[in-house]
Length: 379
Ligand code: NZQ
Ligand code: ZN
Image (cartoon, rainbow, N blue to C red):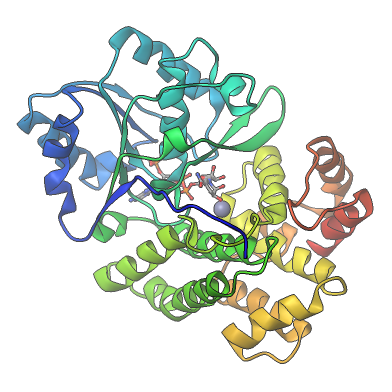
């Protein structure tokens, strides 16, 4: 096992009506609030009103930046940073899914910094301070609510990349499973795929960490047992809660402690597909994971079988892979490119972009031939 240090500073407020504590929590940091959110779902489902009610109670001075897109773009963060530099908020309040929270994380660094958001993302700037960030999560998937990562897209340079910095752990995250009732069936399913993918990326990382392996199995089992039930009953609080907590645990450190790192090759592949075709993150993963596993079948059969035995009672790597693919299909997530509207004629441009973006795993390196094979296997 690798040496490790556990220091996760995010205070997680989980459960029904936790947002009732939002106002007094924000107030600890100040009354000048920059509120950031997405395309308007929070106005339809009443979350915006609840949040504003909390901010009114503390007489907060609020400015808003709205319109963060799924697969968020760096231009929005730069524009929000312009507003923020003039307003000088005491605290940033992000209300939304991963796209909103990730944008807010980079924004929290960009406001007090001379550099653009992208220079921060590519590590050309070394921020030393961040505006405190509080989040209200509205979609269970990414784990961003309790981790130090953000993923943004740069349309000009054709890149979608991840960034990590301990300064961007949210100070507090509020998770009321009822806030996810209005998430559509397809995005609920993508969230289930995403959380399973996070557990898998860590499982296929480097290093022997048997307890972390067991957390991986448990999280995947939880998602497989309760995910389909949730998709048949989207307003079920307990099922929403189980999936929401599983998503947080899949990427808050629990599944990686004791390893050198996760692998993240499949996410790299998925990011290119989101970048090129604006495909939802979870949908790229349900296509890419089975393909990556098929590529790895000859290379790491025992590791794949170990997972399959623990989770599906599978007896070999083939059975494990078909169980994973079968599960994604059963929750109506795409497992082939044409199911996300990307036809065979796109293969050359996809391969080209993957090579330009240096798609790779941290642990299992991918040669150009490997990437070509993965592209074939996704069809
Ligand atoms: O824009 P709004 O109106 O908020 O609508 C969103 C969006 O259309 C909607 N939505 C969110 N909450 C809702 C809701 N609709 C109804 N009711 C609600 N309660 O759902 C759509 C998707 O939202 P988005 O935030 O894009 O989804 P998700 O949470 O899956 O985030 C995806 C982004 O996170 C990145 C992905 O790459 C992608 O850009 N990731 C971030 C990670 C991290 N920071 O640790 C790790 C992940 O692997 C992932 O890469
Ligand atoms: Zn993900």
